[in-house]
Length: 271
Image (cartoon, rainbow, N blue to C red; front, side, top):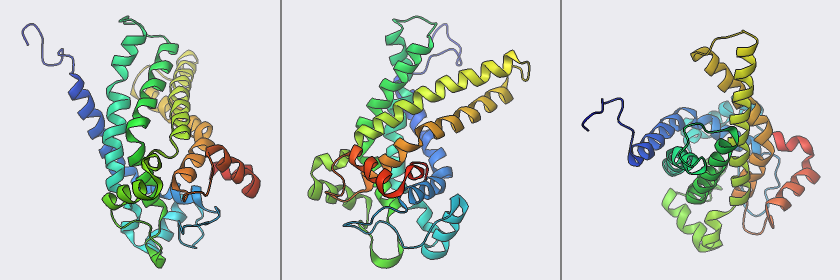
C-alpha cells in the first residue's frame, strides 16, 4: 500500500480473525490437560444420574487429577476432546478477539479514546456473540473431557458422532445447551479482567513499585486472571455441569445450581 510501511498497515478483519483463532489454538494445545483436569474436578461429586460421566476414581487437586487420569486412562485422556476444543477456539476466539476493535469503535463512534465503559460493553458484546457461534463445540468438548476412557462407559466415540448424537437425541437446542450460563460467565470474565487489570496496574504505578513495562503488564495480567477466576468460578462450574448433563437431569441452569448447593454445599461452586 502506497504511503504505508509494513508495520503501519492496519490488519484486515480476516487477519484479525485468523490471528486470534490460531493464537488461541496454540494456547489450547499447551493448556488443554489443565482444562480437562478442571472439568473432571468440577463434575466430581455430582450424581451420575442417567449417564456415567467419569470414572469412580476420586480426584484430589490439579496434579492429582492429571496423575490419576494418566494412571487409569493413559496420557491421551488428557487431550480427550481436543478436536472440539480446537474447533471452539477457532470460532470463539476469532469472534471474541477479532471483532473486539470493530465493536469498540462502534460504541465509541470512532473515537480513539475508549473509556472503561465502552471496553466493558464491547467485551461483553463480542463475548456473547462468540458464545452463540461456538456453543456447540464447547458442549462437545466438555462432554468428551468429562467421559472416562476406562470402564466402557463412553458416551461418544468421535467428534462428528457427538454432534450427530446430541442433535438426534436432544434436538438442535441440545447443541446450545448451557448458553445462558456461558454468556454470563464470559460477561463476568471480560468485565472482571479489564477492571482488575487496570486497578492492579494503576496501583503498582502509583506506589512506584513498578514502571510501565513488560513485568508490570505481566504482573497485572496474572493478578487479573487470578481475581477473575475466583469471581467467575461458580458460574463456570454450573456451566460445565449443565452442558455435560444427561437429557432431563436438570430443568435449567438455575436448577443445576440449586441442586449443587443443596446436595454438595457452597464449596461445590469452587471445584
